[in-house]
Image (cartoon, rainbow, N blue to C red; front, side, top):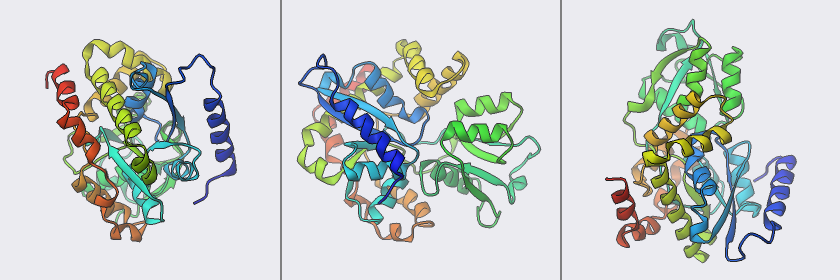
Length: 339
């Protein structure tokens, strides 16, 4: 697996800075550099956990590093430049089909909350024929959610002769929509709000679509899961604490501030939209879902046929979430939120 040299250089510099951090950081903290590709509110549980010191409670010093795509993130993981990553299931499946040994232990996302945003002259699904959609990469998480949404709406990308154009991360795709460089994009609610204020049209809000789905979560190399189970458990606990913080309405302003800063949102209105979206799609039901993985496998196999041969049960690791349930950690978290 290869990725661009400047990406590797950047990751190396960040990793070096991270590991020679000031002595003021407690020596008891295990340092974890985690990469991610999708720059939207689905990184919220990790951002909030880091910002509010929730991982430090479990002896972890975590730093999040955004890279240009899931493929770059995967390559950084396998080369050892990062210790964990926060990937879309599609990126994991593609990586494993190429020989990467990866395991995933938990995900707080099981629904898609986006809008199908199009140029204002497109007023129906029929009008999508031969149009250009913006995606971050082919086979990545942004592409995956786009394909799942279109499939659920009965839009066959091949029959409609849709073009999937690699544009970049979500802010870049939003700018391409605003500049009319692409015709359509399945984007998050916060970005959709910006697009609609600029005069673009929303054909569908996907929040109520019922499809087997699982989003980004905690994944790493299989050998790290086997050799450092305590580290994995502490990461899962920190993520659970972040989810409780996010869903506690008393923390709304603080969570909005974290999202506004990380997503570089220009207004509290957009930050609130992002906050509401994060609360809508995130959940304490964090166990890996084989049915959702197999549904995603079906889509990814269209571009990477070898993915169809994978046994998803060999990739997902359920014992950590099972332990959180049995020890009372997750039940207590739900109790705090009145669930």
